[in-house]
Amino acid sequence: MVAYPNASTDNPSYMVIDNNHMYVVEEVPSGNVVGYNISQQNYTLTKINAITFSGAYPAHLTYFNNHLLIANYGDGETAKSGVELLPLDASGNIS
Image (cartoon, rainbow, N blue to C red; front, side, top):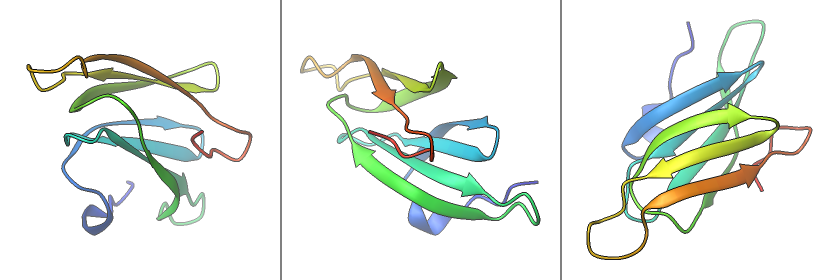
């Protein structure tokens, strides 16, 4: 079982695991996603990187063809709802 580091991620709403990487969206106005490496020895998590993207209040996340696909609720007042497509490099870094 993977222990999620609650102290390092704000209001996680969805996660996806692909091989030895885990990605978590933070359901916040700024639209954040955080990537982690999963240790194959003891299943601990090490943060890879985190980025802020243009969407707001991300609600769903999936992995597809070396990309993260993120659906955003938005805030109901601006055009920050929609879908984000973020590429991943070979090391799991989010671009």
